[in-house]
Length: 481
Image (cartoon, rainbow, N blue to C red):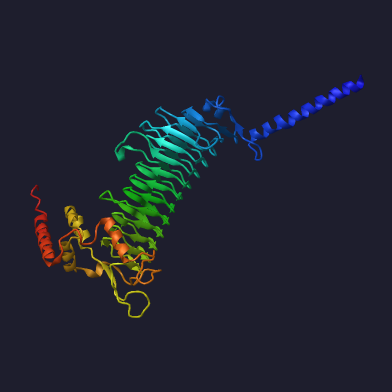
């Protein structure tokens, strides 16, 4: 009898040990979020109420959400990871006025969800507020407002996500921004694709942001920083925006390794725009097929080097810019290489201009003759915008040739590069020949004179017409006084 009791006690003890190892202890580790143990996974019927699941989770947990459609809104108030499993098989659909997802906890993360929130409204689709270190990854957002808004949160990461306008067609000014940072320093915005928004990526009063490897299309500004110091804009690609990237009112920006093409459908389109930007570094960017490749206004102390500026209507345009250094840039196939007014105090040296023919007497690869940028047309159009219609007309070029006033104050490359670096037998540094460059220029805006009358008679006719328009365009005395 005693032996039988002992065997029963032994069996019960073994069962208890098995339960302890397989159920109780793993549950404790899952709750604590320690590595090496699986996260909490729910069946679809259990996860129907996402808010209840999040509220029940403990800090540090990873909550895996199965495929399905879930109703918003969702508020995350604790540092948990909410992950769709598999990625992008769970969809949050929201039809209300507030955010579809609101994250209020430092260290919280949202991964792998599709979010449909296409009603036009004031509140953003995803709002991160006072949540330092929050992470948003691998999201697919269709919005009728701001896609992702980060407010008063440092060190936030937005990575690998897609944001696009999902509401009915609206004026660009009525749309929200794709990814919008405000008073949120040291953010990382990387590997995202944003399309059809007001500004694709907008950064305001947020220092030390890193904006890297994003694709931004069909928006007003692809990347737009304001009142933000030391942003790093690296390796991004933009097309069909009004402006590819704009850095406004800030110090220490680094814009490097980006490609902005085909910003050319608006009268104010530019590839890269610096406005009131100080000590900026623009390096190794490619701007192609834009109305203006690189536009610099009221900016000083910048280093602009090794950029490829090709097949734009205007390669470089400077207005009230000073103390900037332009070195080793490659300009080819642009309808007009450069325009500058009130921008004499900049250093241009060692740039390649495909329209310039210099003389290199000492064989150092630099021209002994400088390349002067004639300010006539830009200054003239600044006073009489309607005369932009005469851009690159033979008559305007004739007048530019006559205008030589105050030449000492013109912007000038003092030692232009005779051949593009890496060239071989007249080829461009990308291996294309002159015919390809002319072909590219045709796509950017036609050849320099192909759209206008040619020959001496045409030049004389356009010069006479330009002279008459200048006479008629003179400002009449203001008799209202």
